[in-house]
Image (cartoon, rainbow, N blue to C red):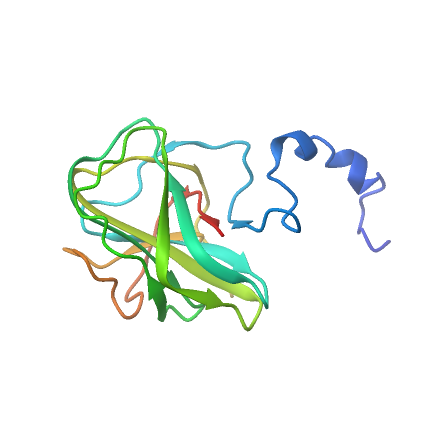
Length: 188
């Protein structure tokens, strides 16, 4: 057994296809994402006014100012509230964006939410990027699907919580429910 376990190939060769599919080098264009750019699809996220939070790994020293989500094939119809928020691994609110209220969100469009206070990460680990949209039709998002946690210590990759949310993120992610659909989030 080697450092690479039972794998006998060259990891650089095996993962080479990611060089054309991946994002820029984070050393030149800072970003953190919860999913690769490949294998994504149009997914339903959460009902109107419900918080959808996704796990994203952030590193000590990262300065997170924005959270970007990308709508899928369905645009938001008659939105009334739209905000994003960043939570720590325990589910406590760190910062949220301003409410984008009735701002349009077309299909297949990236929407960036600036956090009211940029957050300097002081401990590497899993954090939660969250999005809540109250609208007649909530937009679908670009993302993937995931399995429910089965091993002790595994967390949800995506979860929903809350109801009837408007302009303010809840102080905690209370009673999260597993969600199979995992939206892509890019933290910058």
